[in-house]
Image (cartoon, rainbow, N blue to C red; front, side, top):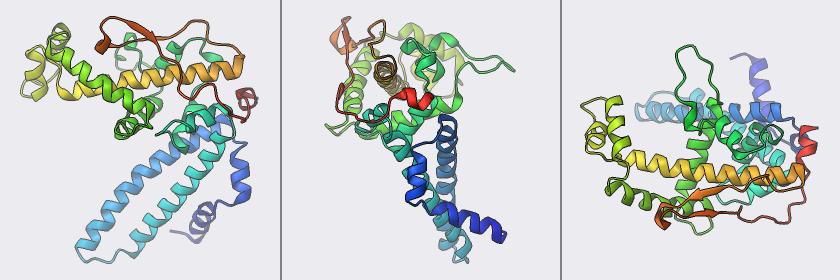
Length: 290
């Protein structure tokens, strides 16, 4: 590794007051780049940690590996801090960070990926995040109609974070997941998804556990989990759309959003965003879009 590269990394590792202030004025494009870079680096750092452990167990020299690992972790922390500063500069970002489980990077991801100017309804958010089942699977060579990176961020990183915190009373969305999943599992046990399950049986390997379950007219446990998580994420995005719409347009979205509650029968209920309205003195999204 050249001296210039090492000096560049060392400079990036130091996130001083000037860079924190600069973080608040990042463009959406730059913030989105840093969000993606952060998650790429996080994945690489986790792999590096495994290599360090393996080298240590084998008694091999690993000073350079350890240095690389520590440098990545420090830089990762710096970017995380910068993303927190960026998101907290805006009222919508402050609402995001007020939600238990939503940290600096996830809040920055939501602000930098979603553009309320292009989303008159929450359906546009769902579609962009790959959560609209009507899109279907793309054919070979066809351009994706959603953001693959955003789908990963919403469904897995955000979704699993809320699942992880579902045991905390402070986590609004995690608590909803915790209530929704057993209700969904009960409907599954009653055979409510039998027709769909048998259709899915034709799409998986016949020797798999999933095929056995689907063939019996039941969804596998993992499928139930994914459905519950996806429902929770879509609700979260509905609330995010509401908050961003009001922030930008100064009025509520044109139509209310409703969600089915299988544990409550066929009733449909309006669920308003938690901790909204509130005291969020940050900038308007109009300044972000500039």
